[in-house]
Length: 471
Ligand code: ADP
Ligand code: LRH
Image 1 (spheres, rainbow, N blue to C red):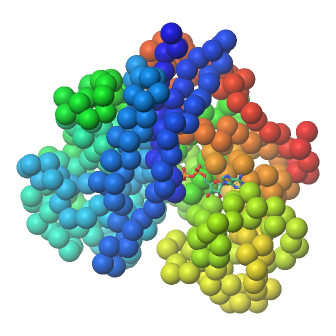
Image 2 (cartoon, protein in one colour; image 1 turned 120 degrees about the horizontal axis):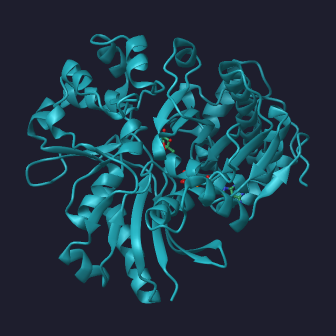
């Protein structure tokens, strides 16, 4: 009988249940359920609908039962930085606010009244992003200090869903590191930092590593979905899972985890918390086996997602990409400009940027998409140069994983702007990485390098030369 492992991978734009099994030494995937995701505007605040997401998680589990494919273990990963505060009855305090909400405006300055930006980086190694948990908690402290008093626990989003499934609260390491409250040397919470900022350290559970068993489904969940299952912590940060599935064991590889965000960087054994690294705005997120993801957050395909919604919801990403490839508009925007984080209208934001910088203003969806794809690829090119300058190494291949690896035109541009070879795929890297940790725990693979070799042999991977030609 096939042995199944289940990944529930919830990205900012969609969630999916993917069953994996081994056959003839290769990993096989079956997507059994998919649902849309996104932040809702709830009375002016951008929120996640945690209840709906949990219902969707259970819907996908019911699908396993329907198919008669009961996994031996499962794990959930989501985006980073967002969390819930739970009261003494485990009810969520306030809203489940999403990272694009503007409540964090000015919260960096509040934090720096206590600790300077330089000291904070030296202590955590985390890239400054206004939405990091550290700034979100400052917003809570400023506007709802009572929540911090009433809170009995804090859980990152995947930790919360694992808790709802099992009744067990654990805080997983990779997602916890995105909050900017973990020490990259001890790999533990920086309780002193929490005390300095006035955040209640008692609400933070000890850090648990990927591979840890959370527990089995509660009786109520078993009854509802029709089976019991062991929940095992994957790298619950989606980027952490995606990077596990980069199909190479070459230490000199540059990867891009390409989805709602483009996360571009390398894997390192130790965090680099130097001021040079801080100035270039690189982060050191904690990974499986204490490998650090040394990377930069780049605004990513969120820009294309937004334009698609505003222009023509029904047009496919593939079609947008093909149309953009026919354009020659030379305008370039700075993808990491704050104006693209949560604009009321992305089309206008891109046009405004071009106008403001005296460049040709794109009009059609094809032109806007062409400007975005070119700008992303230009940003990748700049980031490669920064990585090479910081590490003193040179790299010959960019490994693109995630849904964005489907965007052929962007892969071509990535090769051209970086002057590197591009390897594109697997497109479901996050789910694969999630499952990889479950399989490593179960002894399917003896080591991560063995798993990465298998991933490289199991999935369709496209290759481009430095000129962007597929070979
Ligand atoms: P997330 O996990 O952050 O929600 P995904 O990894 O699922 O994101 O990637 C979704 C993105 O991949 C889409 O926004 C889209 O831009 C891109 N994408 C997916 N399929 C295609 C395709 N066939 N052609 C071009 N782009 C695609
Ligand atoms: C990508 C991601 C990224 C975070 C952002 C909030 O989905 O997890 O690594 O910085 O979402």
